[in-house]
Image 1 (cartoon, one colour):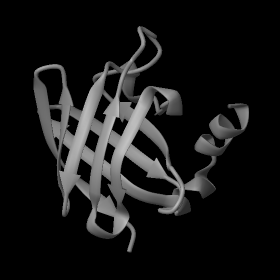
Image 2 (tube, one colour):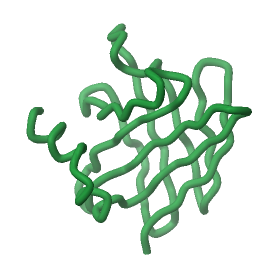
Image 3 (cartoon, one colour):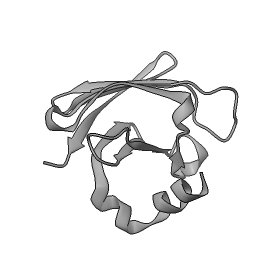
Image 4 (cartoon, one colour):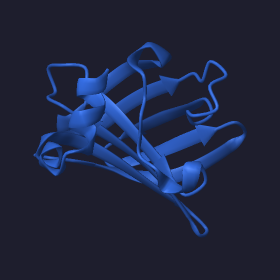
Length: 118
């Protein structure tokens, strides 16, 4: 776990970003970064001005299910379940394809875009 957190904080890891979700809602931003290679389950980093003042939070793999992920088609279906840990964002789902996506947190849906490296 320490190794993953260290890797997430290094600027060199940005070159391994497969896809990024960016969602805007009024004066708030939401971002999910999928770090890794398409043939391996990516590390997922969440940040939002709404939760923990925009701090980047690496999501524990045991708390999310990546049902679909395809950087070539900017395709993603992710479900994250918070087990009651206050240091993690609330439960959410992200569904998107071909550059458009929706991030659902409770009853709220934040529209956004998915950008993937070619």
